Amino acid sequence: MKACVIHEAERVVIEVAPSPVPKAGQLLLSFAFGGICGSDIHYYQHGRVGDSILLEPMVMGHEFSAVVIESGAGVDGFSAGDKVAVTPALPCLKCDYCKRDLSNLCTDMLFMGSAARVPHCNGGFASELVVDARQCIKLPEDADLRHVAMAEPYAVALHAVAMAGDVSGATVLVTGAGVIGQMCASAARAAGATRILMSDIAPAALERAKALGVDEVFDARDSKAMNALTEQPFCDVVFEASGAAPALNTAIAATKPRGTVVQVGFLPPKAPVDLAKLLTREISLVGTYRFIDEFAEAVRQIVSGEVDLRPMISADMSLDAPDAVFARALDKTDTLKVMVHF
Image 1 (cartoon, one colour):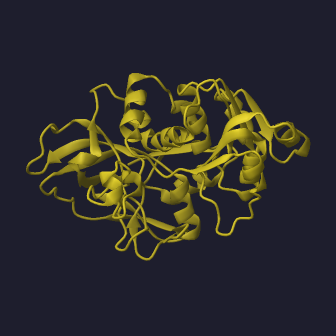
Image 2 (spheres, helix red, strand yellow):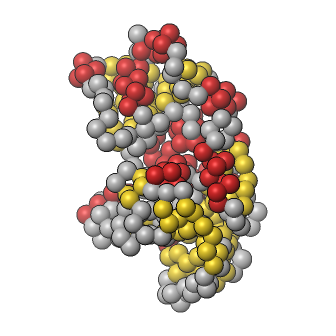
Image 3 (cartoon, one colour):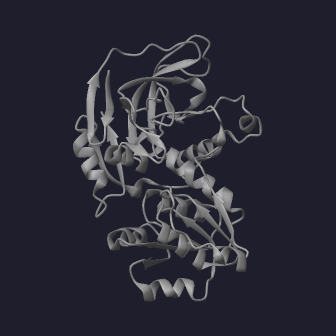
């Protein structure tokens, strides 16, 4: 089998190894499609994502779909040839957070394609791979595996919207027009938000946002445009999806009294943020991390056709040329989501 392995920043290679063998409770899968995530890009550029530092070679990738090759002992409900959605999260189910149905906060989480622990957790960008059967959702025979590969980032967006509370009828601002920002907009719309606004520093990203159905866009480099958001704040909920401190400052300033800001993007350490308006407007600032049972809901919405995330796919590329894949993913002028395959 072939695997896309990162050794250090800007050094990703395709390695060949024997096919893995499923143990009891596991499935052997054939990789179908995967998406390049912002965290994959951070590993490629910097060899780290926040405090998760690459210390050893690691198979990349955590957004993907697959087809069952073989079942390990004790696995029921799956047969060779079944299409599956695969969650990269494998919580321990034993810690206090798992017992409280907060598995995204598991203290002993195994998360595919993550350097958060040592040894690192290998990801899904391998032509053949083994996962626990409980990570898989069996799909209908006619399921679009390319579309289903977007379930993981959409689950992140669904969880962010859940953390915001009831958004029905709300005016929502999303700061950051990348994939997660666009998916937050889609998830908020699906949850009943009536007006969706989006800001970014990249004109091309804003044009793409309008084409994807955002009601109004704001150029974050234009002080006059941003004043229209912040002088008389009118946003009920703001999803900060850029991970930039100036965007969080804008998010707080654009939120009306008793509104909610949901921090979705990873902020840099010691980010300079003005929190004064949290007090004077009684704004709620909420963190959101990964997802809980929203992965199954993301798969359901995609398979049922309730959402169509395919317009966000900018390119389909072979993982056999990883440098070309990451070069395209890093080109934000015309790229949103890069989808990969072997």
